Each structure stands twice: as C-alpha cells, then as structure tokens.
Amino acid sequence: LAVGSSGGKVELVDAQETTAHISSLGGGGEGRASSLSWGGPHELAAGFAGGAVAIFDVRRRGGAACTLPAHRGEVCGLRFAPDGVAQLASGSNDHTVRVCDVRSPRAARLELTAHSAAVKALDFCPWRRHCLATGGGTTDGSIRIWDTGAAAERELQSVATGSQVSGVRWSVARRELVTSHGFSSMNSTSNSVRLWRPNLLPVAQLTGHRGRVLHLAVSPDGGTALSAGSDETLRFWKISSIGGAGGGASAPP
Image (tube, rainbow, N blue to C red; front, side, top):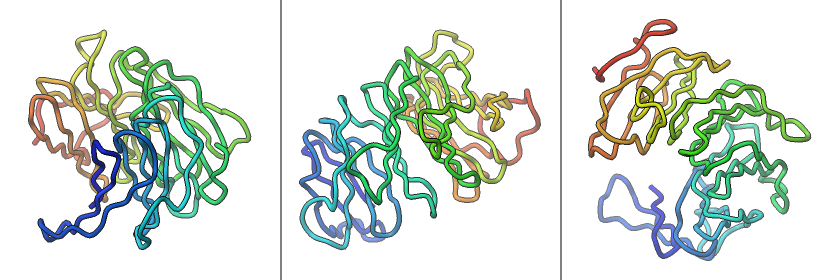
C-alpha cells in the first residue's frame, strides 16, 4: 500500500501487516504528495503540490526513477493506462490534463485544455485503447472523453453534469462509466453517483449521501461501486443490477 504524506514523502506499507513499514520514497517533488497511481507491481507514480509528477521503481531505494514535466498547479489526479499502453495521465489545479509516454517522459505527449476547473477525476478505458475519461471541478462540471492516441488534442464526447465531478471509473461489467459528484448548481445532481453509456447518455443516478461524494472506486469485476462522502459514510452500490437508461436508486443495497 502506498501512502502520500504532507511532507512530500511516499510511504510503502505491507497492507497485511498493519505495523510493517517497507520503505520511504522521496525526492520526487515539492510539497505534499497529493495523488498516487500504480502502473504495475513495481511502478508507482506520485503527483505533488508543486506540480511535479515522479515515477518510482519501488524495488529501488532513493529518489524517483524519472520525473515528468511539471504542471503549473497541484497535481490532484493520476492514472496509468491499462497494460500495453505506456501512458500516464495527470490532472491538475491548473485546469489541464497531461498525457505522457512513460517510455520517453521528458515532454508531455498531449496537453488537454478544455476543462475550466481543477481535474481530479480521470480514468483510462480498460477495453478501448487510448480512451481517457476526465471530469472537471465545481466551476466546470463536465465529463469529457478523449482519444489519447491522436497526434493533437482530440475530444470524442462531452457532457455538462451541472455539478463537481470528483471521480470517474469505468465498469467492465456494464461497459459504462461511473462518476461521483459534489457541489452543484443544480440540486438534483449534487452528492450523487451516476452511470453513463460510453457515449455519455445517462443511465442512472444513485442518491443517498448527505454531503459531497469525495472519492469513488469500482471493484475489479466492475459490479460494485464504492463511494466515500463528506457525510462520513461509505456506500456500496451494486451497479451490475441496475436497469436500463433512465433508471435510478435512492439508496445502496
């Protein structure tokens, strides 16, 4: 388990032994380690408040194996592409998403600039190569799907949600996109989890949180979503059993 600290270090601990500290990784960037993403059993990316992104080989002691071009604001989201696509996407408070080729990381391959707020939410599609979903913060509220294999910025789909997008994850079970939401200009969309077709047509809205949804995860089989809210609850949603377009739920099973 990797844990980012306010002092800028990344700690590795054995998740099966609560007191077993493995090692500390440092030297990646300035400020707190604000986002992390595993790219395999030995490859770990970390984003920092100063805007830097570092990639560590956790088998090595010491500093980062390589660093990527820095954002102009804190890095608040990171995601490696699935196996076979050597890309890492980073989202930042500078309102941009950068996609780097981890085999030659000296320059960003793409810079995606359509969002107008911080980008914390991002995820690569596991069944379609070079397909990246991103979600913008409160003053943006859009979900965008990109072709990261293109030579320049190429947006495939977008939708305005009317609320802060705090998380996006693809569900392999449904072949749909799952998103979580916080602050909203439309009360009907705030504090919810939503399901979308890949073309961003809405499928369902799941409500129950009494505060912003801060974090979102989807199980490896794609059948269950987990949301963590500012109301201090964790909610498990059995998304594999939700019906067709337009359906919804008022509380998790």
